[in-house]
Image (cartoon, rainbow, N blue to C red; front, side, top):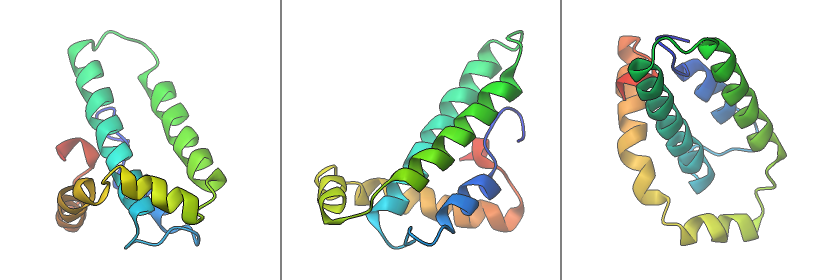
Length: 111
């Protein structure tokens, strides 16, 4: 973790799981959630730096997403549901930024 954010390596670990295809809507949902969580948590702790235990909060968030993705049944119904949320629109920009920033060694808060 860096400055109270989830590192890209944690996101990559989830995206590398065998039941998640990188060109799928599921990957988009994962990326979108990580981007939102990283931004929200970073802004919260940036605004309130005196809050104790921020590391614990981030560990719990990361564990939650590992569990959530591992428990998700990526069947046709779920794919249809995710498609109805128009997740494709949320994938492209964050994924390009993640690829760019991973080459420069930056972490999630810079997204």
